[in-house]
View 1 (cartoon, rainbow, N blue to C red):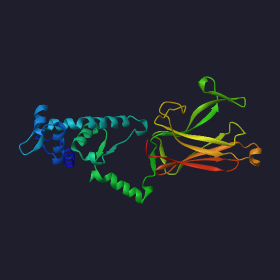
View 2: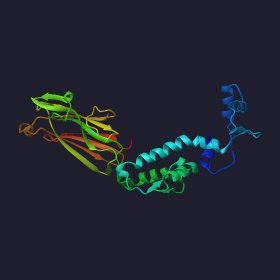
View 3: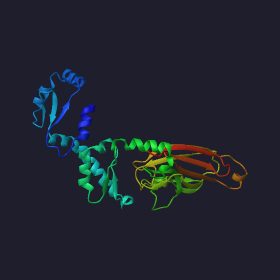
View 4: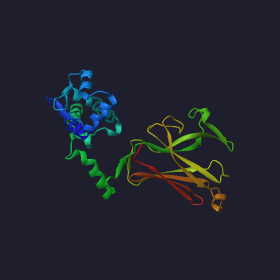
Length: 292
């Protein structure tokens, strides 16, 4: 169906004549075998004057029908761009770049121009269908070309905080060593949509809830929300885990019970590291920074 894809990509919303599409012999053969009827018979049964079968053995699709093929996906793209432009962090954007194979479509280009032409300048680079490929090759040769990314998700860890009546729900209260704690707290390291520079690192310090612990587990979480409070909130998912041994020693006996947790944002992944401040023992884990 590569010919059909080529026809869709080149179809113009200004075209007034039908689009002729030759169907592959294998497609016709399989259709007739499965449907128990020929393509002309099926089109006659479909009974729509916008799509017919020519004597040359091709589909003839009128412009109105071709536009209907585009409508669902084009409307969804326009709606998505409108949603993005309402995000406060994107306020003031003046340029919209169209890249990728589908953006070569005159139908999509016109729809975006009609929807955003009065507020954005739309830029369509040459060879729009290979722009992403070129960018990937350039990035592979020189990763420093991209030095700032927007985090696709909110990342953080689950931890305990001192329980505050009125702020924390009663069902989250736990008692350890006669101290009231709030469990399942989502401690955020970076928010969804936040601009993060290459190599940026966020660090937090945590106290051990119990001094007799020989090991501890730090669980990494992510969510699309930027207003999350607990790791049990809807949409929060576990994305990693760090197991850290706690080694007794002079520093521990002196009362040091601190753990240090950091997230470093690299080019395509996040490196999470936990360290026992007394023993300097460290463990690491990596998280994909590009996918949701």
